[in-house]
Image (tube, rainbow, N blue to C red; front, top):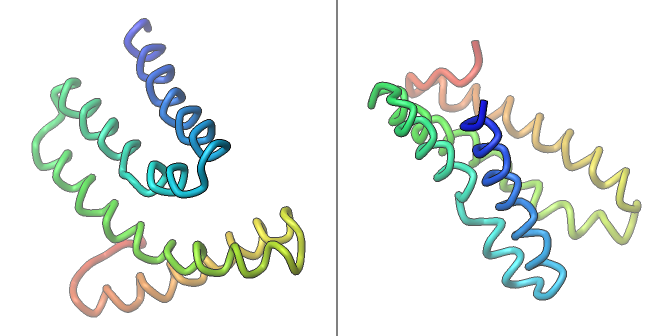
Length: 117
């Protein structure tokens, strides 16, 4: 139980660090948010918990393919925010991400990469 609590606290600390940095500097906050810090922590947790190397490798592999379709949202968000407000921008950004993910999953399926069940 202590291990699970430690994982929660360290992972939460990363999110707090990024949000606090973003308050002070847009560029630094964006840079830290773009780093795969949560993925690194996840890979470390999997390794420390003695998961098979194939599982750890697959996590990194699939993370790449799940990140790519999220990128258009980062372009749409700043364009939409001043026009439609924060919460509607969040909703539209989520919809854009889901749509892009669906299209991307269909595209990569042609190359033998199965992202959806």
